[in-house]
Image (tube, rainbow, N blue to C red):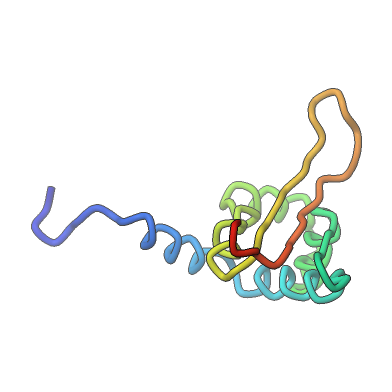
Length: 112
């Protein structure tokens, strides 16, 4: 191990993860939370979030960029938002189910 290299702490990983997610993705998530907020929670479809993100970046080659989003784990933002005070849930269908994947954001309670 080099003299100047040290292991990352879990907090440093989260910070680096947040820096790797494009601003346009975080903007899209924030907009979806505001748009879908009902006073206690915001639930929105993963596909609606992706559509908004792609419209923000002006992308026409959606399939290529979907691959880029998932390969780079830009949809793995839950922990970042949890650290910001949200309770974040992700629900996706099991192999034998068929419904849209969704994110739900709720304000964290003291016991969460």
